[in-house]
Image (cartoon, rainbow, N blue to C red; front, side, top):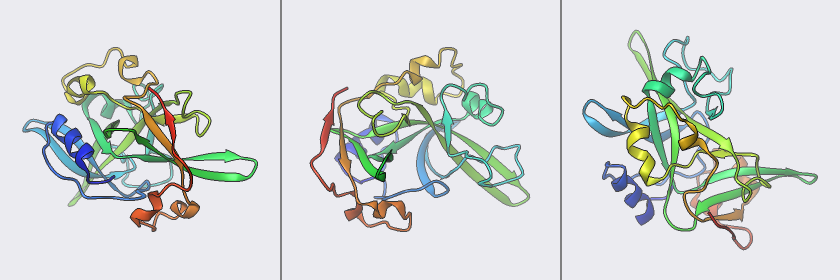
Length: 219
């Protein structure tokens, strides 16, 4: 996530006119920004990227809860309640996927040609005694053809016309396909990265420098 004019414009479109800090190589269990809607209006929160359901025993990495599949998010016992009541949007400048081939794994940076990503997410609030955890999960869908050679899944990318209904907790999502059909919100660029991004402790902005020419995928 890079603090640039594209990200600032997205935040204004989301109704939260704040500048976000630059965050590089963010990994599950770390903190990510998420826009949610509350009784006070839209707010920006920072939450743990690994969902801790309100009914669970507490934070854990026993199960993979950082992503939720769009095909089952409305019915899964772990995700269906947040899907109904606690939907959010995670702003991002880019994301990283790993391509597996006979030579091993290769990281790719995926970013908009212009603009920023608005990823569909769910979140929940867990509390026990004086300990409170707010956490979230990104929703994924089948990758579009331009991304599929790298990875078979991708985050759900919302468009400007989706924001209001997705964030409004009073909106019943009776047709999830409206949001979840695999699509790109705009043209994207793909670029190979150094494998140093495999270490989440590496937070240098130089990690996002392409190793080769960027490839254009049209929406």
